[in-house]
Image: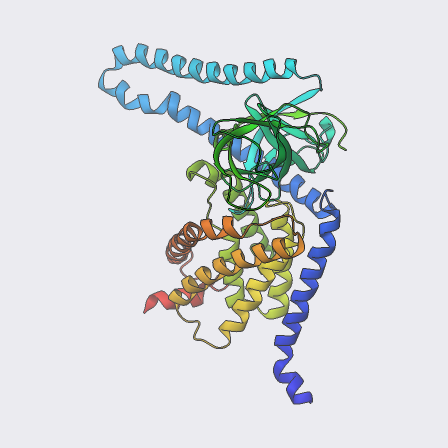
Length: 272
Length: 178
């Protein structure tokens, strides 16, 4: 018996370790909507590094784009290019400022249209994995950001805050598989739930008898208690009415381009 | 420096690369899983208890920057580590091809375990189709990254630290001598 135990000990102890890890994961699922101590520490530790690196990369890219590539030209024709370089750099810089202005103006217009107080934030990092869709923003508990707050841009819904530390917060995008947004079709008011599928969304629980067309706009219904009513979620990409069953299979393209997410607005209201 | 501290520093660097640098370099939501490579490496070079504890803590750290399920990566990475430990005692580990193969197998196992842990414990979430769709690209990305990192690490050690032996690198280096 002792020999058998000695021989198989690593295997059984591995199994026990794994079971304990799985058990601990399943216990933690109950407190999934709150930021635990360790997650707070990780956010506090990684946030400043991510923000610094993000700023450094964008700064370096701007420098390269605005100035460095002109150095060779200056050597070819110093007198003419000197003038040209300054103008080009200014133009490029102005262009960048103009684009940023446009984005912020759209956000501001949108902000003014919102009755709820909003807080602008910058996206500083993305999810560490390929399977999940979250982003880190540079605003946190000190600015009033808490778990459950909706995050939007002018184009539509981005997601909701799932983790918050004093200066940083993580936002679960609506395209994440664990995200569900109570939604309705703007035209015929058919209700359903928009679930994330990575790149796109699926609009679940829409009855077969509802008339839905490709291109129909999907907006938040305000039923979930997280997102206010009427925010744009996306547009219907495909509809499969199916031959049997209660519901249709509807694919939705999100209104927000998540690959170019730079600034967002957090809707400051008590999370429900 | 303490080996454990080095592992955690490497994990921190990997996380920053994956969250800030990779999204700017790669299109879409794909990024090489550097933490997985580290876990496979730990599986080859660390003992069951010490390595297991380091990997489990690393998983918790990773949960703070990936997904929204505390403990998920603690479980997933620990399972991958233990699987690697189970294999290394049965095969010849003096082969870089084995390390690359383990990275591939680890990627598949990670996808399966993430899908299982979410689908089994959270019935309202289904990620099987999404993971199955993304897995081939993720496999390729992890393989290429592991290959480049192996070559780079050995080259760096030979160039800058020819007389020093870094944890595990002597072993790796001897593979490339053949």
